[in-house]
Image (cartoon, rainbow, N blue to C red; front, side):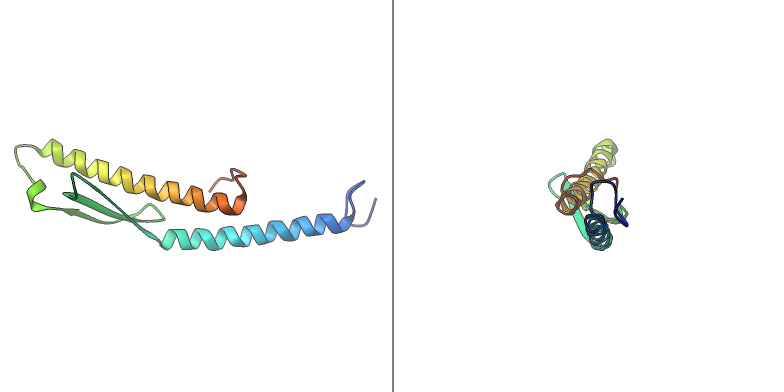
Length: 111
């Protein structure tokens, strides 16, 4: 067996693969940091409710326009808040998956 390799596989190829994996790992870590720092926005009810979140899926702000507050229809406001929050979280997930896919080449790694 070649030194540092596997039967039928020269040692240099294994070292090259390890270096490539290390570069990918560094790129992933850097991208994760960048994605976590990004801010995302979503709204519902024609802008009556808007939400901001970061890439860590933490809500940063929730804004409710006065016109959206109707004591006779609290359910509508609740629905708009849920819709806006779910949309912003979907955006975070979608963006993270798309950006990671560029680095990992669709290897479906768990992030």
